[in-house]
Image (cartoon, rainbow, N blue to C red; front, side, top):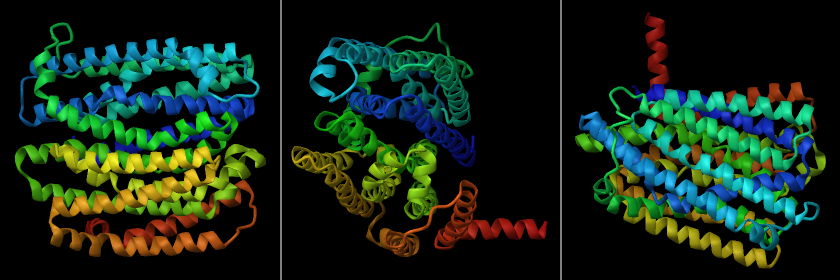
Length: 500
């Protein structure tokens, strides 16, 4: 399957799920309290923290499947690879459920700070989180397997089906049965059970895979132990890095305050959905090119992908910077929630922009198996960020936690550029920096500065949508014009159409 088709499939699924998640927020805030919504955001942080148990197995199985396809191994061998990792993943899922069940009372009493939810009810809610996570945990495994087969269309078809089911039934249950927070987590467990079942069935229906004859081999895990260890440190530190601020906030601040910070964080982290579809589609391609020794092709593919990332990230984040207040009011349907959330938005959003622009460089490193350099990088920025979080948490200053995210990601991006020099050579990176990076960065800096000093009047929803669409089209044109590879491709396509 072509890289272009996989990228389109990834964008279709991710943008659809982003829309669903955006629509769920006003639904939550309408039928649940801000404190209960804070519990939901804590669950999301908890999922990220438990990635420690993944230890890089997800990316490893992705790489193993992609490599087996590039080397044209027999699919019965691939079946054994999948089964070996599958058993480990399900064992971890059960372990996570048991851990949360065992520590549910401690989390409810000693970690979370709630004002209105009874401790006994909160203990039950945490136990239900454990049940939901048992079925949530294997989802990333099966998605990584299908990604290794480059079957992104199937992955995203399932995402869309589950997204429709999740939103539709939640709206029905909230509207007609007054669904409470305990029932919400029971329903979530059902959704994850269905999604995992669909993914499992899809994986084992890949042509010539043998579900019944596949066997577990410890030797398969052992031969990957170096890569698992290396990629595991990266995976753990990288995922915790993104989630640790909200996890720590859940202990030092009220759950309602976590909700306000999380809304700003959710709006900002939506930018990931613009970059990860590109990264996910290019990762197996990088693995394939590395296996076949096509390094020049990887560099060319990287430059196109990186330019596309900048065009999308700069354009959409500019919209959020410029129209933030109007967007949040129409999104949350609550002026108080909007005012308390926007306090954190600018530093969190700018920090997330810095973060997204390092992802594709790291993707090449992981595809090449160069884990030592990125592990040093991630451990450094993780402890930098974690230290700043603790410092400002003890001083009860949540705004400076947001600025710590921005500062840490600026450091992360600069250090990642230094890694790119080692990967591409100094002269190649200077060329990339001059032709691909410096101009769009400069224009973006001007847009961010102007947006910080201009206050826009409140608009109607229709008026806001029209002006956002016009502004987005203008920004996309501006940043596309700065990206010579993308610009040349578009002009070439236009010429073909004209000549045709």
